[in-house]
Image 1: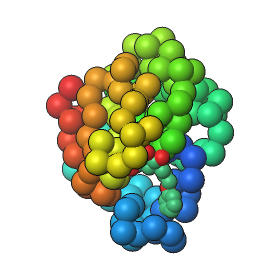
Image 2: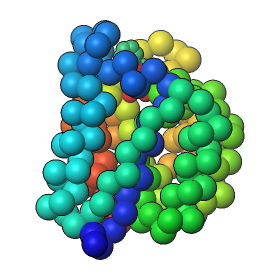
Image 3: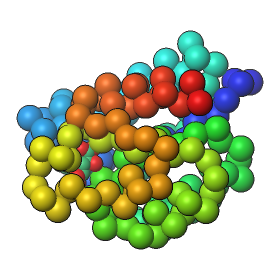
Image 4: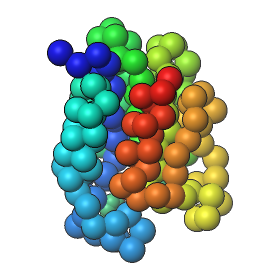
Length: 145
Ligand code: CA2
């Protein structure tokens, strides 16, 4: 059994990764990124539990579950809910597990509505703009917490 457990939660439309808009989000699928995380997790002695949902409430439930399961950190790419969801902000504050906000793109170089992050108001930190590597860099950060 691995020494640590890290949840990797992905929000709406990220199931489409690798199929559309590769100029913004890259050509790797979410499964490709999951495989990279599992491989790096093995080296770091971290088990990865990665999920995606298009439904806000699922993400809230999974944040609660991360706490119940004793996860040491959560990597969260909440997709567009990043910019709208007080429910995710409240959940992150409630669970007491460090959440690392992850984005493939850099929202600050994009439309103004992406410059506000409710997730970021409660996150331990944010890694954005490095494509699939954002997830791997966030896992490195989680390993050092
Ligand atoms: O850059 C990121 O990771 C985002 O979280 C992606 C979200 C966007 O709303 C955030 O502002 C930044 C959008 C995810 C949509 O994913 C797609 C993937 C492939 C094709 C179309 C959408």
